[in-house]
Length: 95
Image (cartoon, rainbow, N blue to C red):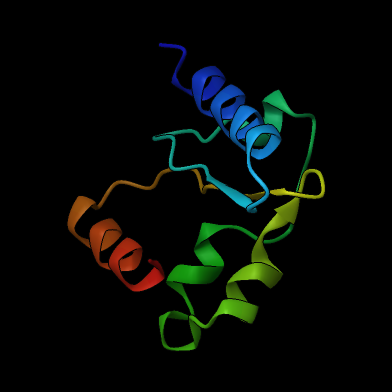
């Protein structure tokens, strides 16, 4: 409990402390809540990465992420994400 709150606060704090950009990836299961907490919606999400694994270059990933402020961007999760092995494959490709 509280992992979404901790993740959001950590991402905001990191973006305030560093000159680098920070990415917050919402992998909350079964229901991702970062968008709800920040009162944001996005038509693009982690599902767009899953469906386009062969196109995972920097510009594609940045286009899917929703800017929150100048140094923080969010990759929204998808409800019902369950397959752990598939998730690991996507994250390996992403990073």
